[in-house]
Length: 639
Image 1 (cartoon, rainbow, N blue to C red):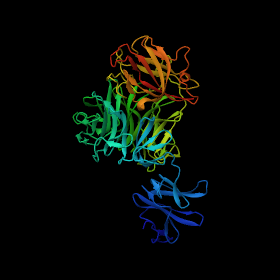
Image 2: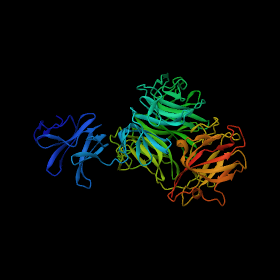
Image 3: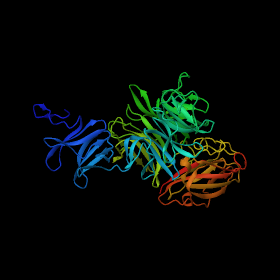
Image 4: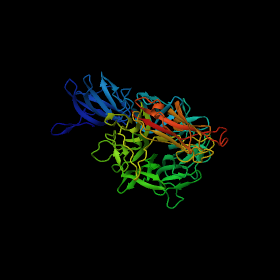
C-alpha cells in the first residue's frame, strides 16, 4: 500500500491506496466536511490528485502530464477558495499548465505563468535578427513558452513568445549566427548535431547522427574566412572524423588541428592583446601531447592548440568577455575540486595570467553555469548564474553580481523546483521597453519572489556611482558604453580580412589598428554629459560622420560596407559631420547640442547605438571606396 491508516494502536491497509507513489497527503474541507486528498503517481510522466470520500478514491479534473504533481493546498483567489496544485508537470487535465494549476468547476486551468516556459528548462540564449528586428532566441527542453506551444526553440521579442519551427526533436544546447555566404542564419546544436533555420524549418548540416551531442557554438576566422565552430562530446560530425571540435565553412566540416580530449562545454572568441583567438573550455585536461597538460581552458590561434596553464576553474561551463575598466578580460565560470568537495568558482584570464574572482561562489557541491557582461548605470556589470546558494540562510540563489572584490547575491533570487537540479543556465541582455534587462533562463519556479517558470527578466536600477580614478592624480572622465560590432574578428568579417586591433574598427590603409570610438560621461537625458570621441583616424581634416541607430545591424555582428563593418540599423540618424584634427574627432564640442538632444531621445531615455564613418585617403586599399568605419558603441540612456 502507498497509504496506510493508524488507529491509535495499529497500522491498517485497505482501500487507502490511490496509485503507486504518494507525494503529498492532507485533509481539506471544501465545504462538505473534511476529506482526505492525495497527490500520487503511477509512472514518471503521469500523476493525479485524488479525494477519498470514505469508500472510494475519485480523481479530480484529469491527469497531470510530465513529471509528477507533488504538492497542493487551498487558497483564496478572489472568487472563493480553490484547490491549487504544484509540481514539475507540463499539463493538467489536457490543458497547458506548467507547474501550477487551479481546479475550477471540476476542471484544471493554468494559474499565472505569464511569460514562463514549460519543459525541463532553458539552456541557452542568443540575439538574432531574422529581418523583422532583433529578438532573443531561447533553446533548451521546451514544450511551450508564454502559453504558446514550442518545440525546444522559442523567440522572445521583449513582450511575448513565438515558436521557431516544430521539427527540433532533441533539447537545444547552443545557438549562434553564421553567414555561409547566403546571408546570416540562425544555427542550433543538440544531441543530434547542428541544424540551420531557413525561416520555416530546421535543416541538419550534420546528417542524422544520433548522440553526436554538440554543446557549444561560436564563429571564428582561422585565416580561411569565418567558420562555425562546434564542440561537445562527438568523435565525428557530418561523417567527418573530428575529436570534440570541428569547423563548418558553409559546405563541409573539418577538424581543428588534432582535436581535443575531454568534453568541451564552452567556446569564446577573445583578443588578449595578441589578436583574436578561439578559447575552448570543459572538463579538466585537453592536450595529452604536452607535459604538463593544460587544465580547464585551451586556445586555438588558427594553426595549433596551446595551453594556458592551470585555470583555477578546472571544469569550465561558461565564458564571457568583461571590461572592469582595466581592459577586456576573458571570464571563466564553472567548478573546481577543493577537498573534500567541488566548489563553484569564477576566474579571469588577463594579460597572460589567471586570477581568481572572489574565491568560492556559494556553497560546495554547486557550479557556475552562465556568465554575462551587460551595461548598467555604472558601466559594464558582470553577472553569474548557476545552481549555487551562499549559505543555509539563503533559501533562494542562482544569481550574483560582481562588486569589484566580491560576489553579491541577488536577493531574492531564484527558487528551484528541485534544489539540487534547478539552476540559472543562461544569461543575456535584451531590451524590455526603454530599459535593458538581464534575461535569465534555466530550471526554476520563481525569481525575485514572483512566479517565473524557467524565464525571468531583471532590470538593475542600481543608483549611478561616479567614477573614481584607480590611481592618485587628476580626475579622469568616466568611461561609458559597451562596444559591439568590432573589426577585430570578434563580430562579422572585415571586407578584405583587414582586421583591426582589439575593440577597434577594421584597419584602414593608413592606420593598422583601425579607428576606435569611445564615450565618457553620464548617460542621463536630464543630466547629459556624454562625449563621443574617436581616435585612429587616417589624417587631419578627414570628413567624419557621427551616426546613431535604434538597432544594431545583423544582431550586432554588422555587415561589410566599403572598407569596414557598418553596425547600425533601424532608424539611423546623422548626429553631426565634423573634420578630424590630430587624427581624432569628438562630439559634442562648443556650441553643439548635447548628444541626447541631437539624437532626439525621449524623456524616458532608451537604448541607442553609435558609430563613426570616416574618409580614408588610401583609395583602393581594400575596395574602390575611400570610406571606413569605427567599432559600434551602445549607450543605455536613463531619464
